[in-house]
Length: 485
Image (cartoon, rainbow, N blue to C red; front, side):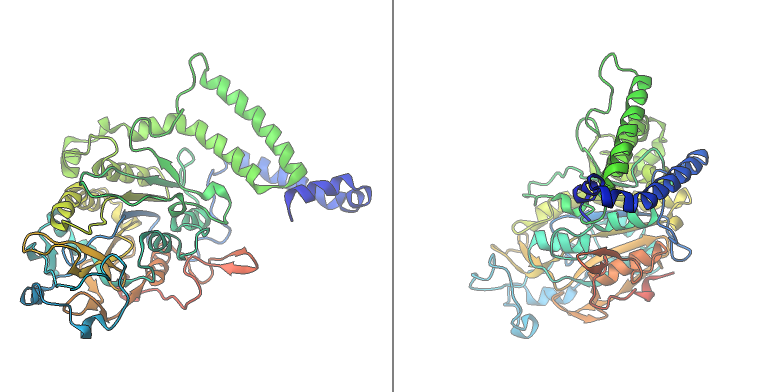
């Protein structure tokens, strides 16, 4: 019922006396429960009752999203036969009349563009990896590379929305919000779901990042990801104004909480509880965030492992190190969104810059977690919203080419809690254009992520608009057992 209508019931004498017993009883029970929780030191981010559904392999999730669509052909999907097809038209038997974007549909030709980058085998598993990813290559025995991911959307906004929320329709909760809602977090001083948006060094234009990628959608808004800024103070107005002591702030917040609780008792709007929780979390973050972002306690060996950009706030390297520090401190979900991967022209130049930004830090994150005994309990996911075409968009030479959007197959990798390392799942044709073995829809990837976190995706629902909504949708998603340790 609408909270305002609910409040109006109090003004109706018959309704008031007809329901007061139930209402006061509920208030009394809630007050007693609050007293018991306070005595025990209540969690700021408690899990839902009955969660997790079973013993989890992973307790935390770090999601590295390469916004714009990294080229699978130039990174992880090795296709040596393409050298024989340089500048030849993409065969109709491969395209199969499937749609392409308007950015290349007007081209007279769709010339095949092999990757200019060298691939080598790495690790005991012998994984083929591009020269662009030497640090990722050094941890391939810890990675499960999925080469057959596909999506429905061919443009960025719906594709990103689909990857992050399980639906192309805006308004659904993000993956991080779902996990935060179900599992809560162990930290009382940091949010359960934190978002970082690192800067990028390439000259490529970057797609906009919409807040729906970390929004709580129809879930209570306290499960929305807290975005830390990449420049300046991580959180605005973190410091108290001159002349205001922390003790003064504490007294003010306690008084404000009492007023908000009074409003909640009258109206019953759950967003009032969200406001109370957010005020309290903001107060706690005044001390926890400066400590979190202070890297002076990290060893020089650790800083060197993440690379030369780690001491520059807002870089991917600094963000990856912060992600490790956050899961150490009980944050449940950390999401890094690195922009600039939409490379329609001069892909070799721009993808080299993007890999410089991210490769060393991504490899270091896996090594760092492993050295600290955290990789077994932390699930790390890397991927974009779709891949890139085998044919060139615009000018094609041996050294220069562009690639259009390609949703029919792209690569992701998973590592850590619950994931079997050193494996490859799925396969594509010789042109990296169609999946030919073990397709992996996004819904299956999300179901597998939830499985590692101890959640049965089929039982993880929220009633909204008369439906039992799920992150994984209704199209019979399946956990991918081959990825699990």
